[in-house]
Image 1 (cartoon, rainbow, N blue to C red):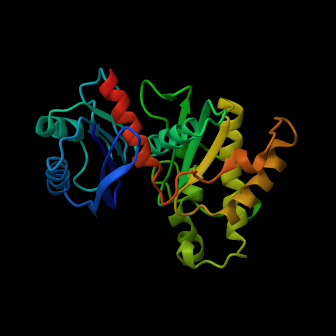
Image 2 (spheres, helix red, strand yellow):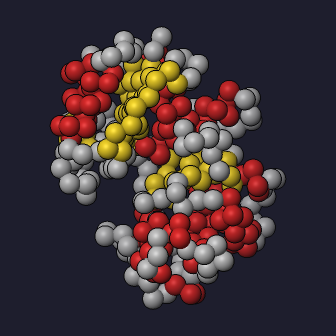
Length: 290
């Protein structure tokens, strides 16, 4: 059995072929350009293999509601040329196989959940938050991705301002000072004039970001009570997560008992940003069993 994975990002596409053991047999990366060129390359790649099913984890917003007329579409995205693109429809017409469609962060969340099950970890639920160019979140509860009417938009929740950050407007074009507006990678450069990877490790901006990211962890803890909260994305490092755990403890103030905070708030188990690919293999396999 061969399973396909598409991790569709706003900058690049990562396509891979694997088996039911979630092992990658082949993969390819190429830039995200126009829908015609990018999806054409995707179709051309998978036609080289006789895959049985495919899962797509895409940038969004996307329509994941099966009964919707625009199911499988990338909808109101700000990415030029990609608004209202029938992503799943084009792939299905060309490949004629079962296709599962979800967000990029849901794919990562499901990959992390799958790994936990493979290693017999006692994890029934988790939240995955990615803090990078944008901020997104997904949750898996008892093997099901959270969301029926649509996918969660955890990156756009509102936050309490850090005292040292009250004058920063926020970069989100919709909400200004939501989580994405205050903690996404571009917000670092908007404040400091320096790209995040070049900012000194002892710069106070990391305390500001930690405060916001810890609030996101508190929100998900109080709403969903997951077994794990996993942070990925280019902004996240173990050094930053140490600050996040510190701020989480202050904000929680002993209200919710957390047995092992270092394990509860953690980086991905799957190395080399491979969570979404592994998750896609598992979701493609599930789609094939329906």
